[in-house]
Image (cartoon, rainbow, N blue to C red; front, side, top):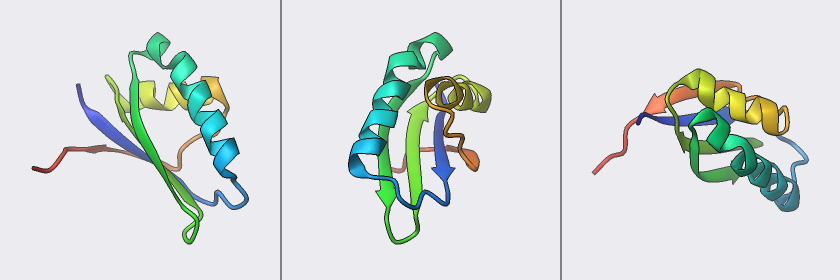
Length: 83
């Protein structure tokens, strides 16, 4: 299944607890969309959140965030793992 990295920009003010809560909401609904969230990262300096997931499509990856909490990504790109 393809891997997707999504980028949420302008995430100023997000707290560690808020990010954990949003991720938990993603995990709760991801199965309905055939998505598997693998990990997420936050850059306080750049005020950005990065989420890595396996998904059948970009649209499925976006649907999880939309349903879970409404925090839509600014970009979703297909990536491949390096060796």
